[in-house]
Image: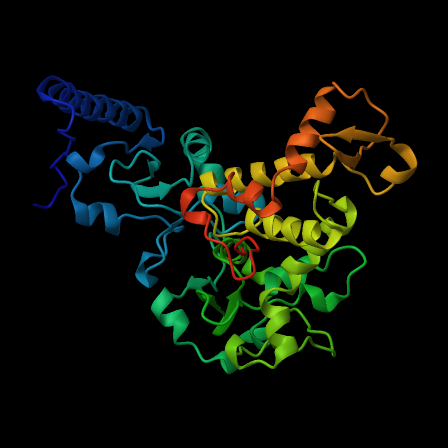
Length: 376
C-alpha cells in the first residue's frame, strides 16, 4: 500500500462499543477530508488531520517544509516555537496527523494543539522568511551510542553545561553547579557543531536541545571539584565503611533519643534508651513496606507514650504512692484512682522486652541474644 488506509480500533469492550469506535473513526476521517478540501478551495492553510487515508506516504514525507530535518533523522521542528521564542522543539510523530498543516503544497507540524491553531491562522508569519532554521542543529545520541562515548571527548570535561549555566544555589561556590552523572547511570549526550555535551538527566538534555547555542561557549572555572572515584563498600577501612552504611541513620536515631530521653516504667535509663533506639531504627528502615512502616511507627509512639509516664525530673514533681506494696515515682501528684496511675501500674508490671514483642508481628518476635529486641 502507498497510503496508510488501515485503521485499528480496540476490541476489548465488546461488539457494540467496537462497532461504535470504528464508525467514529470513519466519521472523523470524512470530517477531516471535508475540512481539508474546504481550506484548499479557499486558499487557506489546510489541516491534515486524517489525510493519511488519501495522501500517499511518499508525498507526506517528501513534501515537508523548511522546518523539517528528516534527512538527518531528526524529524520536524515547530515553526511557532522557533519564531516566537527561539526554541528548537522537535514535534512527536502522530499517526492521524492532527497537528500537521499544509501550506503552499508544503507540510508543517506544530508541537501542540495551540501551535497547530496558530499555524492554521497565521501560517505565513511562521513558515516564511529566512533563515527558517539555524545551520547547525543538535542531535541526540541513542542510549547505546551515548554509553560508548569516550569521556575524554566530552565538552567541559563531562560536566553538565545546563546546571553550570544555571549556576549554584545562593551562598554556594560555583563548583557546586558542576555536576556529572554517577558511574553506571544512563548517559544523556547530545552532539552539536561537531562537539559532544553530556547532561545530568533526560530533562536537562531536553533543555539543551531547545537552545544549544546558549551552552556552547561556557568557560569552566580554574578550580574544579574532585571527581568521585567509585569504591566497593566492603573494601573500605572501618571508619569509611561505617560512614557509608550506618552513620547517618545512627546519628539521627541518637539525636532523637537525646531529645526524648525515654524512661520505661520498671526499666533503667540505659535499657529504655536501647529499646527506643531499636524501635526508631525499625520504623525508619527504608526497606519497610507501607504496612510494616505504619505498624512500627505505631509501636514506637506507644513506647514513647509509655515512657512519658515517667519524666527526668519526676523526683522533684512527683509524690510517692503505695501501690501493691511497691513504691513508684509518678510524673506529677495525681489521684491514686486516676487512669494515669492505673496505666503506670499496669505498664510497670510488664517486662520491657516482652511489652515490645507483644506489639510486634509474629515473625518479628524472635529476640536477639541477651534478650534485646531484634535490630532494624
